[in-house]
Image (cartoon, rainbow, N blue to C red; front, side, top):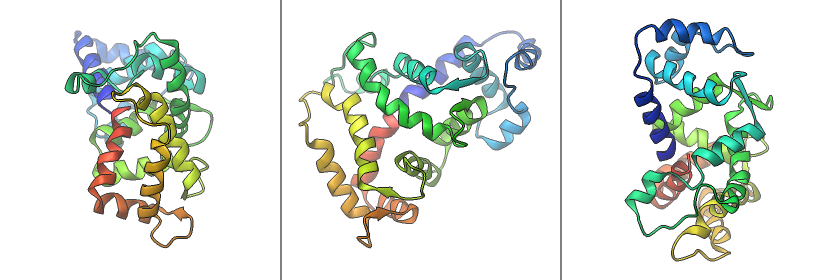
Length: 239
């Protein structure tokens, strides 16, 4: 999440232009293959101001001129901007060592997590992410309530979208995050660390021991266990 906030802040800095930008933004929206909903409607649906939405739209359009992004493009953008969890995290903890953003290994390791992240953004499962999808998710992750953020995170872990999280789904997401970040920490995490964490967390979350975690179980477990909430920060930091 820190990486997105940094990118969002840099966009705001770069977009200090005359008031005619408002007219230009509206004109630009008519020139793409997909035209987003009106800014007033998006402002009502998100926690962003109209000006912030204009800034975000301009940045989105620069990366995705067609107005939509497919999975491969999403992976490329994610690898470019968020190759290792955000510079702000490195500045806070210099002991963590990551490869250069240009490292092929780093980009490859980000691909699996980006795949899952894309499908969480693609709420309609159309195979593409529109600007509306992007800002709605960003609004939740940056400015949503704890409950909203947890619901969004549950949706990320619910890979097959059946309304439940099974142990393998949780393992797939956690392993993708560790593949992207964990092996570059110092000291290096053991190979079985993701499995150990999943075993502990799933046991706590699966309260009725039926082999699946429901949304209610997920929300209750996260909010009553500080260790789980702290661990979820790993997910938020790679946003």
